[in-house]
Length: 321
Image (cartoon, rainbow, N blue to C red; front, side):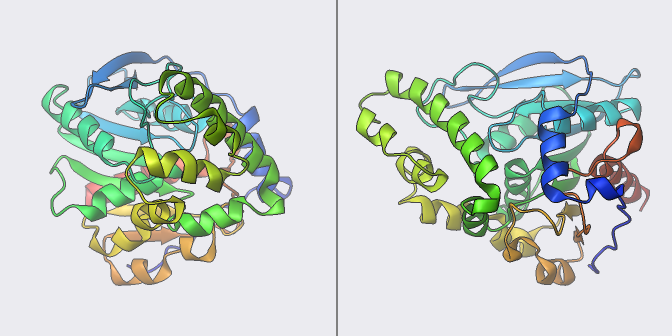
């Protein structure tokens, strides 16, 4: 599919990727009424799902997946949900395991390649909630999960019509290297603190799996992935986790119409995270690379972000074909 030319043109003071990323992640606020549902999983764990609804009864749903250490209340989740609710679609914001304000039951939790929980959510909304038309949208880590899910399996439920992936770290090793650079130190340290704080809670419950010494050895994000993510989820080490979980290798197999929006000034992304070749060779893959936007910082006027508006436009275009 030919590359899409972006029309995103922020105000001059929002062209700085760092500022747009920080504002969108720490300052933006979105008011939205949500109702929580707890979904029991086959392995004995649970997911908390935060629902918001169209004023009119709808058989159309958008499933939203957050980024690293996010949750269903992050503005990039509630902003999209609010826009879709206003356009006659229901929305469900998925809180990954351990991200809903309560630690999950297992030692394992979530990671960039864990597509099984998305599969469980889709099965639930089809079989129990009876939605006949489903769209997927993910930010960052959640976007990688969606694209991997769509590309790694031979068949996708017929109810899943399209997907939007924003600020996608398509090549996890490259994004890991980027996050460890000096320019991203603020973000690196914030992520690390949140991850380690949650892991401290797990260590008290699973002392046989993780020692205090192991916990104290975590100084960088890659250490966290070596000490916890890889071992808890069946990978050899962090690099093996990055290799197996990156969606980049699965993009050629995607048959569901999917839009990727990755800003060129996103400091979290390496050059491999702009899959131009895959988009050109796959008629179902659409790639848009705005010059600005930072990491999920596509700020526009009137409280609706560019990536949210584009998600709605993309879905509208796909359904009209």
